[in-house]
Image 1 (cartoon, rainbow, N blue to C red):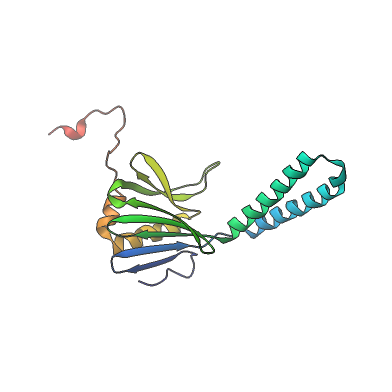
Image 2 (spheres, rainbow, N blue to C red):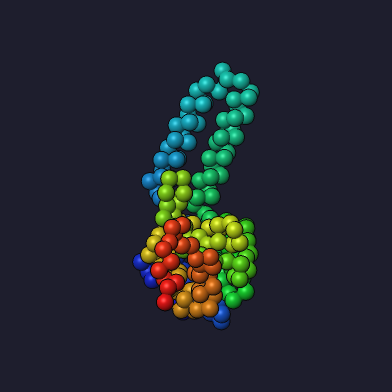
Length: 182
């Protein structure tokens, strides 16, 4: 299986019992231009008052400007890579050669599903690892998550069965037990 459809930004590659999903950074140019404009206005404003403010504020402003610049670089350059095989799921965030990897055994993972973004949360593909929830892919739209799950089902059906299962099927707290009668 080659790269995914041209209409989506993700790339899915499947080979010899392994599935790799690569998600490049999502660039919202309007947001980035707004951040740069606020950054420049802040620099100009602080430059006018630089000699009149204390050393503590000098340090705070420099720290704020450096952290804003680093956040902007992070937004523009982080690539997410998810590797799945029969034994493990590897989540990697790569920033120009620097990697941050986390590995999980697939037998400990379940309830893989797409989660719609809400206030304070971005949309993501999530799964349970033991009792905690792990974001597998952040900023993935619903059609892209369906494409990922379909590729997983096609290339690794037993892993897809394990990851997408719900081990403790949750029933409503009030049941009549009609499904148990014969």
